[in-house]
Length: 157
Length: 78
Length: 247
Image 1 (tube, one colour):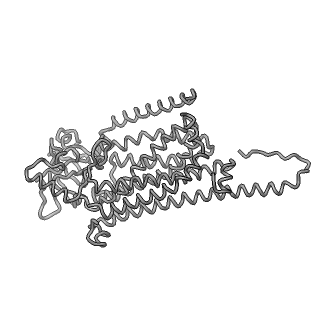
Image 2: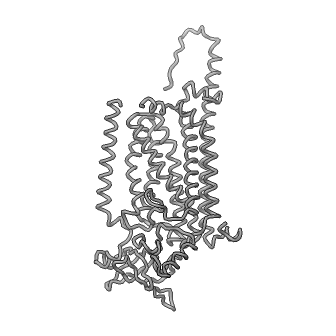
């Protein structure tokens, strides 16, 4: 390769490496702001500010959803399988909302450690499958055989 | 076929408007981009052709009068 | 080896070879894209959780995938422009930047329309969506910068530097869903693992991704030829092509 081109290539590569390092350090320093929501473990560890609009995300705990019979009020627990946070919400829930499903809620944490949400969004994982397959997997896990692939990875919410 | 009837295919259990809007916008934009790109190439070809024809005409007109008293200089347009 | 590389940079050589491949790219691309779309719309099974709205994946993923790979191709061409000063590399960047802009817009639009019925919102400022919006602005910036500078050589260098600076956004888009908490789910397809979806769902997706790749190839050829025609108007081979229809 021509020496001038070699020199230019070195400059370009240095530019790229320097830029990548700068961006990597910046995004690392800002990671808490880039994160869309707080995990239940972060909230129960007191990392989330109280009475400030924040987002909380996690899985809706199985059997924790309590619907008020007279209004749209609903209460449930959000968990990341190491800690749980109680959530209250008044309003229409997204179609995908269900026990065992991921959600991201927007709202405020009150002094009692309850999260009062004003918006609930559904978060789904990267797995897609036909309904029949999902049914078969569920039956298999209920029959007490090997844990089904769907439930095997709780960390993917 | 994943649907029982054509109307079920269109409504998609209530998700029809979302799905069909996406596909419509996608294919219309893609087709528009292909059409515009072809048209731009045709315009460029026509511009070239006009340029060459203009040059050819000019040299035909200029050719019979070589005895002019001043020298012709070809100035590059670059 | 370097001689072959420099031959690749000859506009005349490119014109000849692209003219030969273009019909195949167009026919193959449209057929694969339509096959993927029809299969995905009408024959693929619905998703157990999202129902039929997930069928948007068959155009959302190709658009998003292409939007990012077009940028990577542009960045590679930018290195060639800066190091080797090869004209054809600059022609490529200018020709495909608007295509990348449209593809990024399509990825964002189809994603928003998909997000409404599944997540419950059109838009959220999470890391994946925001970095994709930055990609849209990068494409817009490349086009604007190129138009703003009149001198061809200065424009080529300035555009190449901007493209290279922006390439750090690509790994951020890709890994945003793993590095940070986002509403967007992680990737369904990974190089090292089996896809998290059955074959009757991913085969049509593969078809539409390949189809869009070929259509992009055709678009790039047409647009590069346009750029070459206006730049090389004074060369003999362009005159021969325009007047006689062959290279």
